[in-house]
Length: 367
Ligand SMILES: NC(=O)c1ccc[n+]([C@@H]2O[C@H](COP(=O)([O-])OP(=O)(O)OC[C@H]3O[C@@H](n4cnc5c(N)ncnc54)[C@H](OP(=O)(O)O)[C@@H]3O)[C@@H](O)[C@H]2O)c1
Image (spheres, rainbow, N blue to C red):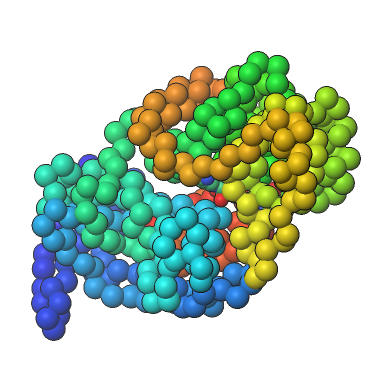
């Protein structure tokens, strides 16, 4: 049981909300009346630096009509966070200096002025790099299925659903086909490769270390793995896919996409999921050569997607992914970093490949 006590006191003209949490599992009683946050200090110039963010503390906001106050429990770190803070923006409006760093989170409703949610509910939101946020109730997604929260951040969350819709809807795998996945030991790639195995494909992963290659081959059941930091990519793909690639699930772009394109088989599909090799660069690499000639001659399809476009079917994906996890057909690793204060360092590490599996920040204890 979790008990929430709220009392209010005035500080200047700001009404502050004091929240006492009776924390379970012998963790004692935590108490806070401040909201810790990271705001963007400046648009990064090339590789992300910790100094691109500023730490600040302020009062906990109060929900207005139709809003809820949430407390962040887990913060997702995503390579795309880096592209959001570029001056030019990405698929969403650019973050501007002084703005709280956006981020996907799982949180607990602390107080609600929205009829569809009550205090204690667990919700997925975009509350960003901070402890507390007031959000429109309509923008929140209540997590109902009986599964650990870390799983909701991972296989059942944004990255798992990206793998699901990207591979199944865009890639459309057929039994016996050859599927290549880059970023194979990451949150999205590891699930995409395992779904391809479930669908009866031969799966080759590309990852950045021997440890990662061993994990995807030995534990996740990929057929082969290529360490792109030690092996020539074109040679590795020719050896692993002598008859060509039917589906390339691209998480990284750049030189890996170039090598995979040249090895595509007639009628192949390239699922453009992400381009992590390019996000942290001041100047992007030139595009892979040979497009569109190669696409025409080999009758290839190359399609990008954003997972939220498929959210009308998110419950279907969550149900199926949970079923596969429970059957032991999808395995996962969690890469949990404790403490909001470590978010900038942990994001920089993610962009350099420090993680195996889904990286997230545990901002506060669950109970
Ligand atoms: N389209 C969508 O809606 C959508 C949604 C979610 C995620 N995504 C994309 O999916 C991709 C994976 O995201 P994720 O959250 O699952 O992250 P992740 O794969 O768990 O972590 C990022 C990984 O990228 C790899 N990497 C970093 N620099 C690289 C480089 N220069 N070349 C090749 N690999 C590099 C690293 O692994 P190595 O050690 O193997 O290099 C690192 O572990 C990203 O591109 C992301 O933007 C797209």
